[in-house]
Length: 350
Ligand code: SF4
Ligand code: SF4
Ligand code: SF4
Image (cartoon, rainbow, N blue to C red; front, side, top):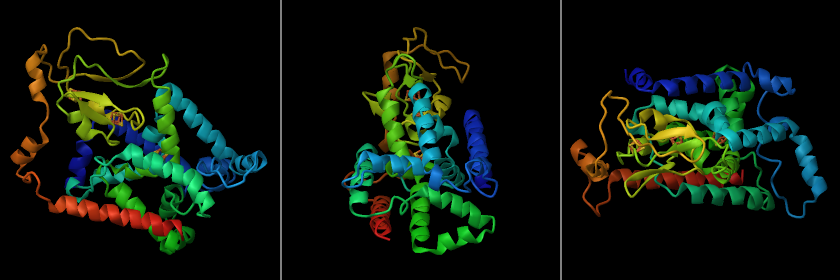
């Protein structure tokens, strides 16, 4: 069965990561939700909300700001702890704990790739911070609620509905619920690697990505880093990166710290031990070796020729399209993208 095969193919470290995400989901979401219950809540809204207290409303004063901080006191503390952890260790919350991004990723991983939409090739940094600016300033000015496009309400309500609670069912059949469910499916479950919502629309992820990037070169900052001497340019890490955070520059992998979630999958799949979660600088490695095949091969300039060629690979797989021709897959992707944009616009004004 395809789902079993998909589970089997998950690298070992990633299985531990999914185990942590499931544990965090059981602690944070209904029907158990025992961590929110410590704060007198049964979901991730209200005092636990991490998405509203930094919004800028026209004419707001410091007093208004502190009213918002007070209303989401637990969320403010959680947000601060997440940013502090990111400063030192990278994006541990997003990669290892957040049930909202984590469950979407896990569901997407169970699906066959042929059902998924590829969002990672879009200019995600520009879209993310464009939307972040809109979310922070324009949405409050236009009177659009921060709750109208929020997966932090959708996933808890979905779990409630699945466990038979009326509140969850009623939310899911409301107009706001349907819009958010559409976003969850298109930008989560049916998105390649399941993290399109995280990469485009989550304000917590946008702030976290900035902290990850700004602090990346501090001497104590652990991040995913590349040892260029070892990289063969095989592209496997980039193809497996759930965030589209790895680009090939001159046939060498480069990690974009503003998008990376420190999930470690690239480290797991790199056959040449070229990636590691470490502090800067990543020291030069004088004796590269291919660790996972138990065969030591010294690098030669020929290695550069190993660079992955997408056109050749597609030709081998029989899926190549002629240069300049438009494939039905790209037409489908554009249609999906337009659908997402329509959902965002309609959902904003509900
Ligand atoms: S980007 Fe947002 S939804 Fe995604 S894992 Fe991080 S906090 Fe959760
Ligand atoms: S998988 Fe390793 S060797 Fe291949 S491109 Fe990525 S870092 Fe380089
Ligand atoms: S660069 Fe590596 S650690 Fe970062 S998100 Fe991509 S696969 Fe995960």
